[in-house]
Image (cartoon, rainbow over all chains, first blue to last red; front, side):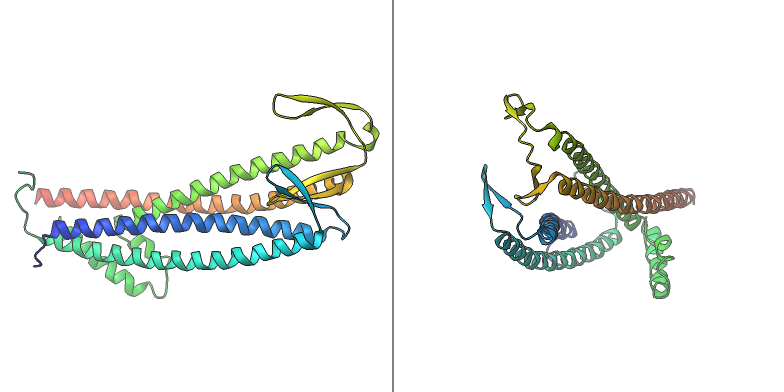
Length: 127
Length: 172
C-alpha cells in the first residue's frame, strides 16, 4: 500500500471534495444571479420595444433620473443582454466542469472508502 | 458490516445493467447513501421553489397595490392637495398636477413615462405574467413534493431492511 495511510488519503480526498463543492456552490450562485439579471433585462427590453417611439424614457443614475432617448435605451439594454448572455454561457461551462470534478472526487472517495472498509479492524485509533 | 456493503454494491451492478432500458426502476436499486443524497438535493430544490413562490407573491401584491394607487391619481383629482412622502417619515404638501402621466420603473433603472391608462394596462400585464409564473412554480412544487415523498418512503424501507439485516448478522 502507498506510503500514506488510508486515513490520510481519505482525508485528503475529502478536503479536495469539499473545496470543489464550495467552488461549485459559488459558481452556481453567480450563475443564478446572472440568470436573474438576464431575465430582468429581457423584460425591460420587451417593455421598451412595445412603447410608442415618442415615449420619454429616464435612466436612474445614482439618485437622479436622467432622460435618455428611447433608441439609446433600447441599444443599451440589447448590448447588456448580449454581454450577460456571454457571461452566463461562460459560467454554465464552469459549473459543468466543476460538476464533473465533483463526480470524479466522489468516485475516488467511494473507492477509498471501500478499501478502508476492507481493512482488518484496527485497535481504536485514538488509543 | 463488510459483507452487507458488498451485497449492496453487487445489487447496484445488476441495476446498472438494467438502467439502459428503464430509469424508473433505478431509484429503488440505489444504495441508501445515494437515496439520502437525492432526498437532500430535493429538499434544497423545494426550499428554493418555496422562496421563489414567496417572492412572486410579494411582487404580485406590489403590482396590485400600484395598480390600485393609479385609480386615485386620475384627472378628476387634479389640483387636489396631497402629502408627498419625501422619506418614510417626512412629508411635504403638494398638489396633484393631473396631467394624466406617471413614470413607471420597468427594471434595471429604466423609467418609462406612461398615461394612467397605459400604466394600468402595464400592471395588468405584469400581474398576469407573475400569476402565470406562479402557476408554473406551484406545479413544480407539487411534483417535487410528491417525488420527495416517494424517496422518503424508499429511504425508510431501506433503512429498515438494513437494520434488520444487521440484527440478523449479530444473532448469527
